[in-house]
Image 1 (cartoon, helix red, strand yellow):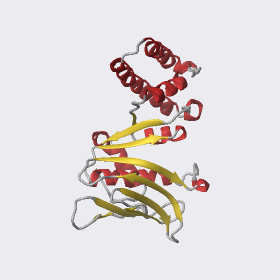
Image 2 (cartoon, helix red, strand yellow):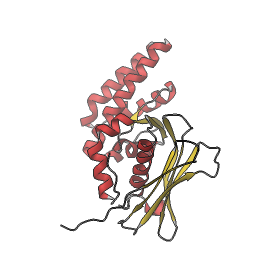
Image 3 (cartoon, one colour):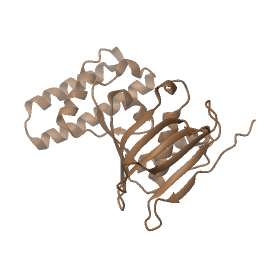
Image 4 (spheres, helix red, strand yellow):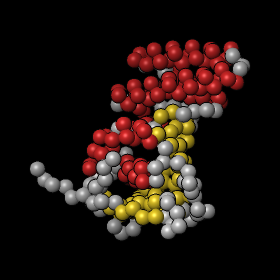
Length: 241
């Protein structure tokens, strides 16, 4: 068996007078060569907006993620994750590496909840790394339910029927409290729909038609530590949960 070199991430304080931490790491083996990941304050700054940059050895930007983390809080909010178009869907796994860096940020800063508003084409990407639907907007919920109820695939028939029944309840009940309950029900249905599409490895046939609020809970990271640890090892990152 060939031994794969691994490199331990560097963790440092964002500022000497506070507890927030920033990581940097090297990905020693990748299809694109050795890669560098660095977390720093975004150029917009203000002490709460940060940027995860992924670059090659020549300094070329390959991808990035912007997020916010306020001092003395235990939540992060993802603003944008982006991989340069020429490297997408070509097994470079740049998006995955960025996500692993953000998970290190979560754990090192004891973040309990990492929230994103995913564009429709990225919902399955986030779900792959254990983000769950957390839609609260009634309009967003209704738009997303359209995807579920209009799916005609035979193996999704049961979920589509549940979605139609839920839409009927939504349209017949005006109580805000009931509508919030329906949103919880919808999020469970979205989770079921996403999980089945991922299991079938046919997500392109089940794309949503709207943005989706999603969250990754710290406890979910710990529950899936073996999965995440295998990804760290895959990329030669010496980090274990």
